[in-house]
Length: 408
Image (cartoon, rainbow, N blue to C red; front, side):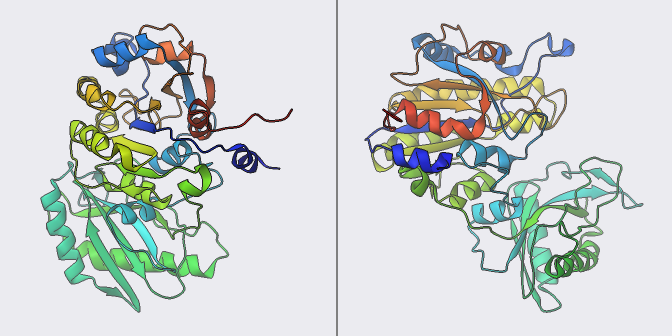
């Protein structure tokens, strides 16, 4: 019997409410130029401190495997209890679903973002200065008008937030995954999308299609500033994946702002609750929907955004904004509450990293680690230890008393 089958066999239905709060990219590292502190340690978090004082278990989680830096997709799938090495999902698929687009069998989706290219075609800004969403919408409308088809393949373009957008290729004989066209650093040209499986005729056709799309689309953007180019990531088709309710026996809901995280939730069958824009509004909506669902995933983006910008002060401020809103959620306290990140985004590195993210778990039977605060340093000494993120959901279920005893 495999482990998932064992968990299913031991499952006991309860009326418990579970909430997973994800501060994207929460984890960080202490460096000399940050006074040997992380943003979580530097932030004033009186409400988190009070929760810790009530008694919580803390620890650190490895998103994928030691030394591997995860993208947001694998990071969140692990938090949802899906082994990211078993369930590989392209970022384009996630983003497309999050934007409310329908994916058909055979569609290939790509997550794209506008960038700035110099006269030599080198990438000088991978995010085009984080252009406003309104600018992105205008540029996407322009592309959609000028590039409707590539050969016999339909091209569907939809704007996301700021510099991000989605491209769907709908035609015959297409398949992912392909490698990214994002070189992942400035000073390099746009990369060529290549088949992951060099023997796949469908992937080869899709790679040529991507190249032809660039030839058609780049001239449309040539006179735009600063967004005169674009990069593509997560070029893939939608895989088969069991739903969250099938795996855990819980009715799940997601309250997220950014399309990608809505898409991740939708991919595993969570109900997307639309509308809230701030973390306070998200917590208010959680309280309003409390009786309608068993499990809530609530996503907060800005810790990751400011980590990628290398803005220590802004990441601290984002954590403090989250903390200030926390009492709204605690008025309708779930039976099991987990607060963590999907990965670490150290300000000093300006990007995702392999460092384990801190996690806090609170329930009537979580026990108390007798720590003063929720920080990376404290989490290192917590009773949860260091474990793989894919087991967090199972620990939450255990804290909800959802498992019978194993064996005599």
